[in-house]
Image (cartoon, rainbow, N blue to C red; front, side, top):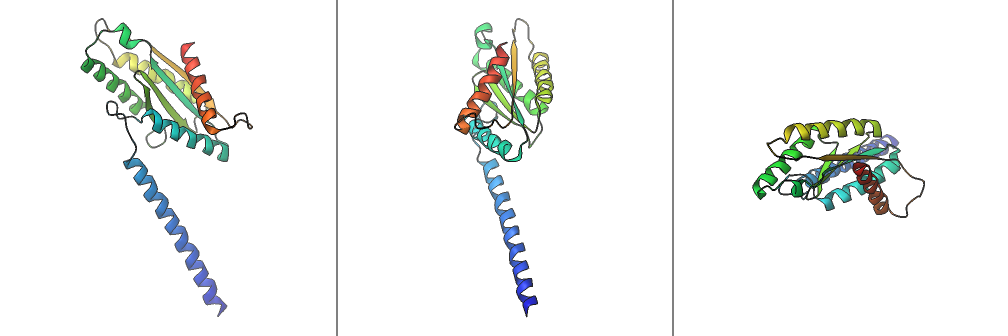
Length: 188
């Protein structure tokens, strides 16, 4: 008799596990289909990226794995190049395509943070690997975005997040500090 109770308990535990996995998969699918993207570059928007970075900080605290962010800026691109809007848009789409080719699909996430600023989050990537990707992205943008009289000055900055021992009171402050460090490095 106790065998039946044991088997029923095992079946219940397995079915609850399967239901939980299916629920998580459904949530992931919904999230992917309902992420707000920048209409021009088809990258995440600033607000969406900030939310995802908060998740990455929480995950890093939980599992102890660091992650890096890569900040990319087309320094004074609009001011240095007097281009019509449609040409400027084409160049920004081309820059976004460089990111899509250089980042790991399904792992890294890229966003357009401002008119000429981009951010890539690279979970599980140490600082050294992120610096290599930054150099690769910078070179690819310079190679791809060429035209007579066009001035392209790409600045990149990399910062690595590793769980700070209660340095900040909120995750939002940690994310802001991480972005600030990457921006400062891009100006250096």
